[in-house]
Length: 137
Image (cartoon, rainbow, N blue to C red):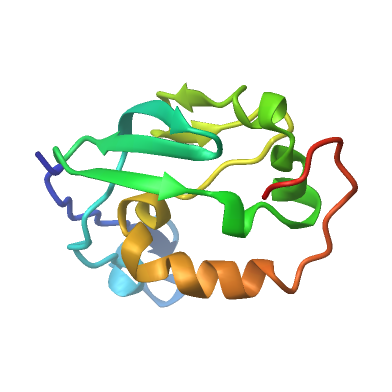
């Protein structure tokens, strides 16, 4: 179940010099509109193969994600080491997968993996990777 969208109303009170000391008015220029996009959170995960997980989301959906194509660059490159990759954990506060080196993925990216994987891999191919003991095959 998706969390309910919320309206947030920020109100700024500003003094009115023309109306004398102590007069104030409500400035409505800081109003925020209703957010209607879904907020995805990882509920659980299982490592099902090297560099591959089955990720379950709070909306009941699941994705099987093979991360090998995106494990490049200074942040994700160290995860090419399978022991490091398998140190993944679920951060329940932010609802996503995290690793001890600080790597994480936006839960919406994980949720929408089939739609974003190719573009993410193309971008990752431009990142240089640090040398690791075991390379992704």
